[in-house]
Length: 104
Image 1 (cartoon, rainbow, N blue to C red):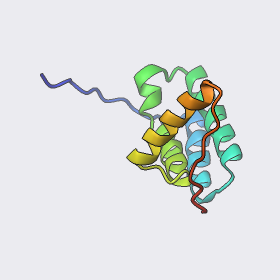
Image 2: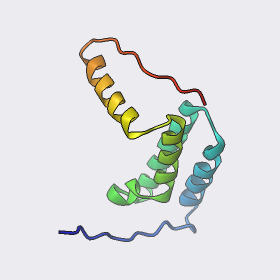
Image 3: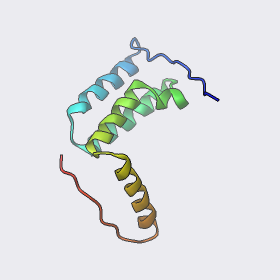
Image 4: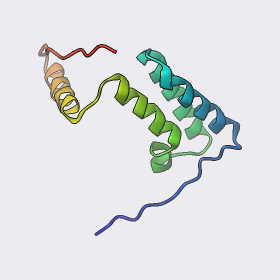
């Protein structure tokens, strides 16, 4: 069974959405992960407060753009994702873990 998809509209005439899109575009050349995550949080919160919620928020072009940037900064691959998920489970249990650092 195929799950139906739905369409939503990112309203460029709303100032909040314009600002969020501007910030999402601006961080594409950034390398400061703390600042990028902060901007991501600030803009998702503003979008949510303006009524964009749930699947519409998770799939909004701003959310996807920030997520893409974080994936790029972290050099995300499926293997790295699985390794990270395994590592956090071990860290939660009090273990120390070694991890790969790939420079920018």
